[in-house]
Length: 579
Image 1 (tube, rainbow, N blue to C red):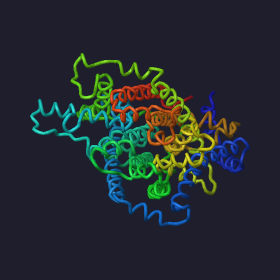
Image 2: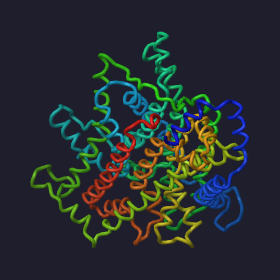
Image 3: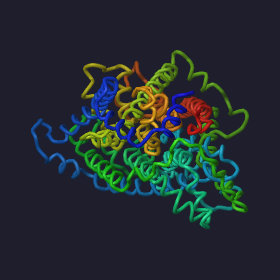
Image 4: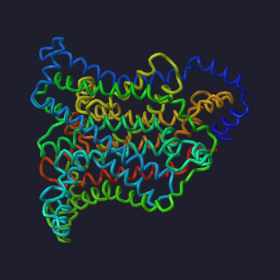
């Protein structure tokens, strides 16, 4: 009998008095639990609190090091700063709306309906998530540039358009690229939540006469509201702190956002105090988002996973089945197939802008990528090592910190959530500066410096995913395992982890993929001996070697897709029926 089966058996026979006594027993700190919690909190403060404290300190001093609040007024009075701030607000608004408009219906279709093409949606959502947005810019310029884009050429030559209908080099084009890059956050978070909730609630609503639509709106979506709100917050913070695509498109379309202004302040000569001051409103916005999440959601009302298997509910859509399938196919085509196809095609073209003919399709770019005399080869190894380490650190910390926040009652535990999430909302460039200032003497010129920045910045992904799973898991199972004689560590290993394994696995893969594509922090921290794939891609773009950039980007996507495949195999069976 496994630990989980043992817990279920004990849960069914344990009296209320015994459970109450166990709760009193658990109120005392055990040595192993104290060690694990203390180590996790120490790492959290080292990763996030220390660098951000340095940045806050810089925002409160002038160029001479004197304490002042005039830094904020001076920073925001700089030319174009308020326009850039307004652009960031609009970017966040439209990207959030678009990501929800795609992610929520797609997650419901995949988790609850008999629509065809559900596996295609999961695959293409992963593809669109792992393609870096600054690489997506290249793909969509190849496809939708006003004059030279291949889709525009097709529209003018064969569809009767007199002018190019698409213009990716605009603010609307930036919004589109950002939506494509972040809607999987909503999709994956909601899909996990939908797979975890007990479908008997929905079945009961149908028995009482509720229609499919009413059941979805009044039962299903309210039960997964924590996942929706958490994903929305992540999307908003991601859009607010985005740098790669806004820098690329903004340069061509002549507009700025707040992150590109921060980057300007960090170019030579660097003005760290002004850059930190401009980043402070983003920290305030993140704090407000966390307060909203805390008081709008009462997590106890959404715990529907009790350890008892329930039949999976599949809604028959009838005549709407093929309409839902068509929607999935269109989203897959636009968000993944076209940009990925453009990347692969561009990586094999002899040069950018060449006619697509067999004579112009070559493989020399990939040969150069693996050439030991090119920086790309070592960057591939560096990126994979960093991604493996970052994903493992974040998944482990996310599990421990998620359990602490949801299960361990002590003063100041909400500070943990605040610290974790505040780093995600902080601009990557500014956060990298804080890490550089805090650890330059210890780790300058090493991969450890980049690992610290990756882990601190991407920890919220794992924390949110795993915490959502723990929110839906009743604590009675863990308490029952303790009654059966299991220690705290074993109850986590044999009970909690198996039930949230799906969330941990997806969190690991998402963090791994994000680590592979991270550019902003890498551009600040990487040195000649610690280059990673995104920085080499950027170097290729700056040198005009767009085809080499596309070839290396295809490798990034290929590695990430391999990891997604492993995660899918790992999570094929629902964790709630483990025996």
